[in-house]
Amino acid sequence: SRPGSTYLPPVKLEDHTRSARQSMVGLPTPQNPEGVEGIIGNTPLFKIKSLSEATGCTILAKAEFLNGAGGSPKDRVALNMIALAEEEGLLTPGRGDTIYEGTVGSTGISLATLARAKGYKAYICMPNDQSTEKSDLLHHLGAEVERVTPAPITSTEHFVNLARTRAKEHTASSKDESRGFFADQFESIANYKAHFQTTGPEIWQQTGGQLDAFIAGAGTGGTISGISLFLKHEMGMWGDLKVVLADPEGSGLYNKVKHGVMFSNTEKEGTRRRQQVDSIVEGIGINRLTENFEAGRELVDDAVKVTDLQAMQMARWLVEKDGIFVGSSSAVNCVAAVATAMNMPKGSRIVTILCDSGTRHLSKFWKKVGELGLEEEHGQTDLLKL
Ligand code: PMP
Image (cartoon, rainbow, N blue to C red):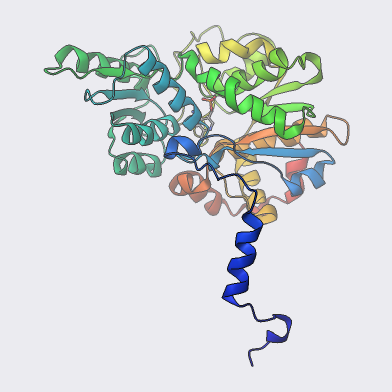
């Protein structure tokens, strides 16, 4: 007989099907979601065990990388921006319309995925210093990708300005009915509203309203604003909830939150280019105040500056201790969550966001993590000395 078979009583198929059928009696017919749109949102909130143990607080992470379409919180935003555009007649299925967007990747991936699902085309302008996984993925999703040299927002060559121009050009030169729609995630309020309407309420429900701090980085600012507005305004958490911005090197938002000013005397708003030289982190950190960040800025209580080295150490820590494999912005969020926890009473409950998977950052961020041999050089305790 097979080893161990004494522990396993033989199961007859007949018994199995009967009991399965019996257990279904009285259950409602399962409602399966429809299409990829149906598997966006309702992401799990789970406790990061190692960070909770190390800090004496409960650190909870919203697993946004599990969003079913494009694998990031931008699925929620893309869905909402498209819905609003359809409502306003800016996008119409079957007309051959193209969605244009300036993005460092995640929003483009979500838009390109949903464009496929809904019968639109997608045209994505993105900086050429972002990981190739993201542009490759966009290509396979059928989006047209224009990779551009990073430029200040004041330049017509900035990826956001270029996307706006391309959308206009499309509509102006269209020989059929088709139109170009510029999604405009940085300024469109459909962005933070998606988080106000879905991510915020989910966090409220999943914590039973028991949370003391919320930590997030900001690219467009939609995530931090939408969730903060819901929790503080809508649920009345005001002073009960500490909202902390997690900011990478090269970003001006930290100074804005801490000191009320974003730029030195010699710098004008938006004139600095972001990335390429500043930080290896993708998706967060910016040098201008967007409509979406402004919507919730007054609700941000504090900011934590996170270095690339800390982000890399954290990324490796999460894999080694917890088997959690994330991208750079998620690692930045976790560093700031730990820094916040160290300054809060033991037992505090802290929520942060895991934005996307490390598989999207293999060629850049994770390559660097591997090269640095951080394990030996920097002990794990460094992370807790923030
Ligand atoms: N993480 C990643 C990987 C992102 O692409 C983005 C969006 N650019 C963010 C975090 C930040 O989200 P938000 O735009 O809502 O501030």
